[in-house]
Length: 106
Image 1 (cartoon, rainbow, N blue to C red):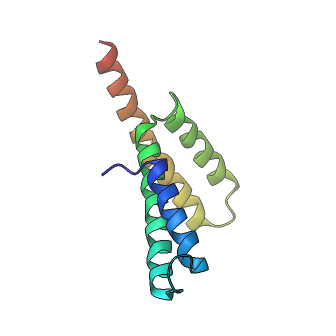
Image 2: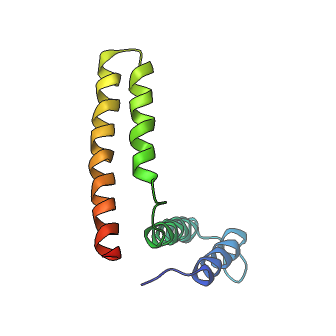
């Protein structure tokens, strides 16, 4: 089920009423449940928004450049290797992303 802004506002309203004991006595368990529901709804909404948004055209290539630069200035060998590993990972992603773009264009 897609979480909408309306759903989040409804949970916020229920939480507001529960926190202040409006219409019913204060119930700590209900407040905790509503806070959890609100946190989960916001997480889902953010995930939906991020999934719908495609990365910028050269996003992964820029990450490769950034990680290589970080590797150059890394203080110790372990961190340098981690940065180089991330550069390799994002290089593969960049190539995969450009292959997808070529297929769509062709």
